Image 1: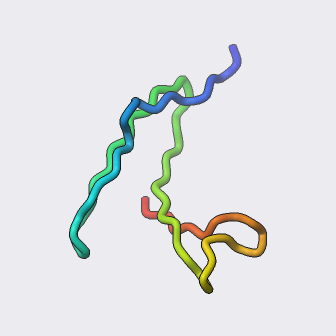
Image 2: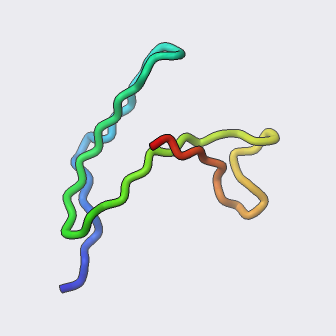
Length: 63
């Protein structure tokens, strides 16, 4: 049996608004035959660009 792409629960993750300095909590429910690997990324700007010379986005791994 070939592995299927993981299924994310509809509506998750949802946008969250918090005040500067407060913690934000994100929830993501994944259904999969395989053990999923989930990372939360923050897109960042470096030297006025969101993308590096290789065309990949600048990101910071949050968790």
